[in-house]
Length: 150
Image (cartoon, rainbow, N blue to C red):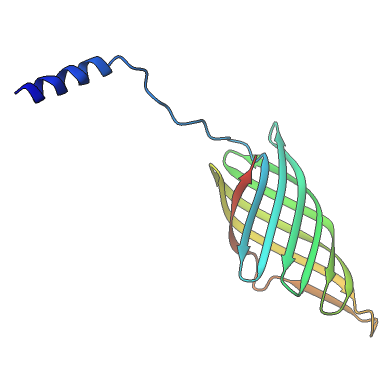
């Protein structure tokens, strides 16, 4: 009986304490993001102001292609659209320079953005002089970006 009374008194005494609330999530895309699918890793460093998104992209397909470019994007609600046009890439197997574009469209939920990443670039083989194209086939690939830091 004494234990029950003590528990009730403690519950009553603690009832007036302020509630502990979790820290507020950052509703923007500000920060560094990363996602992988197969041997491909994409990293974004993004800034958002008034629905406009700017930043940088790094793209790495291990032992195949790597590059970077400037990113422009938009937000509509939780929907994020990112585009890096005229990004510069190196095709490692051919030692060729390429220019291309990378797209990402997804839905943000806190520190994750789930969507699809697309990539297409063109270059010239330095040995043969013939043009070639590199792209994700078939179509954009599913990827989840995770915020690494703000």
